[in-house]
Length: 246
Image (tube, rainbow, N blue to C red; front, side):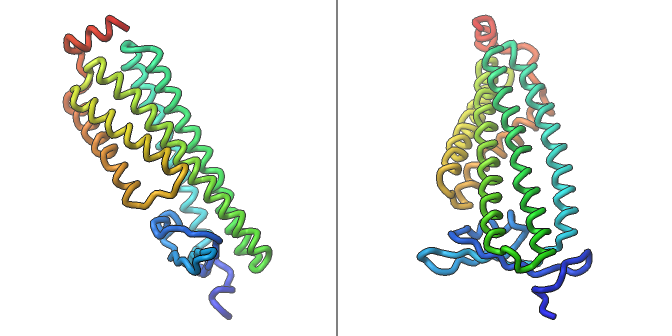
């Protein structure tokens, strides 16, 4: 019996070979669970994804990933409400606006998990009935991947806009050092631009990593600063004037 026709079980994986019309970059290999990506032809190109997939194991991994994502969303909600409480005295309107963008981020990320779940269900159905409607399943899978990716990048837009507003309020109030707030404004503005571009065009992996690096450095720097020094109890004179003016 050929390995490609074996039914996947808890201890025996099946070999998947998925052909998708169009070009999928190799940077999506990790997102596809380490499957090999090869592009053939030019007019039009066809992408072939090949790898060993353990359906039951994939389902378990997905359930664990959902649990981790849920905990991360709860943590993000706790963070954004904490920031709202801290920054509301600076500008109630802008703090509320930033809160709304960050809540939208969480909602979009949660909604983006729906296509992932449908894609997992689709792969399980395809494994249980090989050869039935393969072209239609591949086409539907391609649509689901596109929807999930678009929801993810759109959530990044909401994240970055909310972060721009929060960093602006930090800069006005001087609750953190001005240099750190300025770096926050620059890194989140860059991330906003990159996220919007990613919704329109396919960015190379180096570009996505490059625009995320300043944001990661900001999160680490801000985290270390707050853990060591905390929020300034009394803002400097300029920050106090901003509070009084608002």
